[in-house]
Image (cartoon, rainbow, N blue to C red; front, side, top):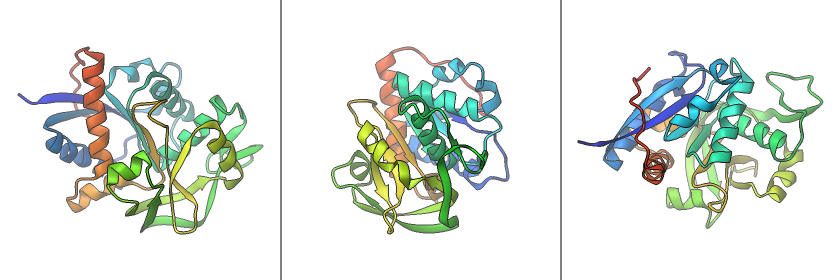
Length: 249
């Protein structure tokens, strides 16, 4: 009987969102390669705003696209939980943007750090509009040689699909790098498109402004999502605690 892993999909599920359709398919494809079944549950952000401990029951967490979230607090709480407890974590598109905000507030201690989409009048706009909106377009990504993500892809280049209008305010790039965040993916203009925490700080913590899950809609298994599932398997073995059965949403 195949092993099962349990993934918490954090976000406010909408059937019309392309990424929300793609993610279960991407997980299924990665699970087939890993020889395991992947069960998942959608976790609405308001349910995590006061207490995110329920999310700690999962083998891995994924902060999904389609922000602004119904509760930014819920989304940020899950990022903190995963980052501080070594839970395999992936944040894509809006998930990546909120990873940056969570890190700014809780690690860089920029408490006013905010998002131009949900709070355009904030005193510190850590996430700002992209110069050119990336809506349903593909583009090249360049990875830092020797980075974990380049090893996962087996290449220093890839072509990925976006549905994104916001990204890191370049003014804060140096502060992130100085604090130990590894900005390991860029577009052709040199703008950040992927980040990771080093292995010494976290077993698997990646965030991308692009949406790797969309590859599943073209019938392609994605290497980053395959690595994510592998990390969830490793975490389950490491914890040696049987996960509770979860019904798919």
